[in-house]
Amino acid sequence: MIIVTGGAGFIGSNFIREWLAGSQEPVINLDKLTYAGNLKSLADTAHDTRYRFVHADIGDRVAVAALLNEVQPRAIVNFAAESHVDRSIQGAAEFIATNIVGTFNLLEEVRAFWNALPPTAQENFRFLHVSTDEVYGSLTATEPAFTETHRYEPNSPYSASKAASDHLVRACFHTYHLPVVTTNCSNNYGPCHFPEKLIPLMILNALAGKPLPVYGDGQNVRDWLYVTDHCSAIRLVLEKGRLGETYNVGGRNERANLDVVNIVCKLLDELKPRADGKSYATQVSFVKDRPGHDQRYAIDATKLESELGWKAAENFESGIRKTVQWYLDNQDWVQSVASGEYLKWMDTQYANDKEAA
Image (tube, rainbow, N blue to C red; front, side, top):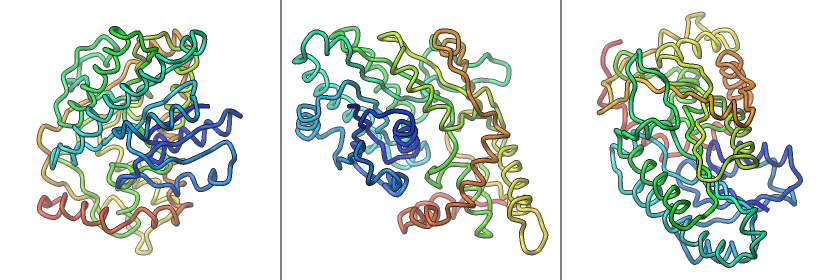
């Protein structure tokens, strides 16, 4: 039995589906169901006897302790986090509460549970903490990609809160010997991605005939990782990762944001052409850059590849085609997340920032 926190979110839901497809081991999904949590992403698992959903907050120590004592998991995979930079700039309190205080409370209850286990169960137990490349800060165009030894230089409230959570996990290993491993990933994309992030936002706005808002000059660079490749890396680190270690997970697919948008437009032009015959690229609209926008992220996944034998199955061209096709084929899911709060957020974020394209 394993517990996955934040399993109704984008990466967590993909991880649970991949886990159930490749293992008979039961999984419990502990999720608070904030705005980006969507159980419809796991609709095909609802009647699987190996799967159970528990509606709870990682910061609720009573609920977490009760669940741990009830199910006696052999591992916990911690995805639960507030994860959008723009939202953290607008208001950081929820990021502090979940990513720092929530992680601390979760670790405290996990540590108490682990301390009470028999020696063999203690030895076999794992706590895997999922984090981000954003904790490392920003790179220039010529700097080498982030390795696991790169200093932490978070530049947003979101990345600062994730950096703090990483440090708490590390401290639990070095101080209390809790058997932990950490992964830091590059930008994920793929099915079930909440549509405030770049790729799903571009797909949905394009199909709706809306502007495609691109921050600044569109030249900020991200290293793109297809979500199921990330999931395979997490499974491998959970199984074979060295205790107390960090493993970077990246797709080696650096692309400028504007290039990503243009690729999405070309795929939509091919797969679902506009009725007027024009390219979706005509909908691109440049908007005022966000404060403190990191210029470039890039992950060096050599340690994961050489130590554990991981290799990404998708390159960006294959992954982005699968992603666009998934959104075209799953309009019911799209409509289920196009809630009033989502629309209100997008209006607030972009309404006053539009500039001439």
